[in-house]
Image (tube, rainbow, N blue to C red; front, side, top):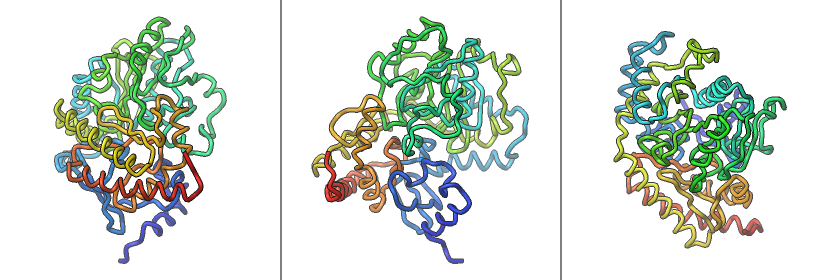
Length: 431
């Protein structure tokens, strides 16, 4: 049977799926061209259907941390699947994963597993409203918290790549209960606010770390008015530290949401926090939430395996590799006169074109609006390095990226940056 090309497969997909994809962030809408269609992956590499290999820094948008198809994880998945893929009943595996999460994050006294990060944040908001008996939520411009109606307001990531900043189909009544404020500025709250939800390290407007005092200030302000503080750790959870943001910054939230890493590459999410807050959930309390596949035995087996394999030393390795790659990429790009800032926190970083550091979404948009990223993205992809096809995504360095691949990426970056610079300026653009 003749193998179809990336173009042929994408055209076929576009006839059956809106935009040819099952998640907008996978489309090439903001960079142009045809997406590569992945056939398989191993370690730091993905392979498209035409047989081309890429050093992969998408890593399933952060869900992969040990590397693709890690044999220890695939073995756990195989063993669990052989026993059955879903039961609709409690399992030992969901308890094990819950214990692993709670043992690492002191603020998680109880938790509920879900099937996605969006479900987790949606549930956290409902819990906060049920606990406080208040309606309004505060979020920050450029922070993405999943695609539930009330949180698709001034969101980052894939939403920011659209022609309009927010989603159609969201009632004005939903948006009106969400207050949007600038990231890295501590707001003055009042007693109408149920909760403040924040990415402790913003990773959906590019990588924007919290400024000193921002998270502690949110904690104090929530305490002052009786609102709950929610850390959305779908990306940062068990990515930036052994104990996530709580360990990293010394700030304890009331509720936490997790996803990505805790599923080992399979669909999962979790919401957890203080016992008195979590106990408003049914069947103990009046706040309803349910999910047929919540606590799925195959996903929990994969996630538990990953968390057991991640030790405190793993994060020193991750940060060291990310620091090396970020500094190397920035250096060679500046050497060819392509202005860039590689902004990093721990093992996460992203590239902002221009020379000014970025501290909020307005500044991130200014960098993206220069229009350099599409040229750089394609110059890297053509040389075998896969970055996310959207300028607001983080670059994910995993434990399978060895020094050889990091050095190769830096070498490729220099050539790609020169090509991107030439194409950018030939299009009569300037910084």
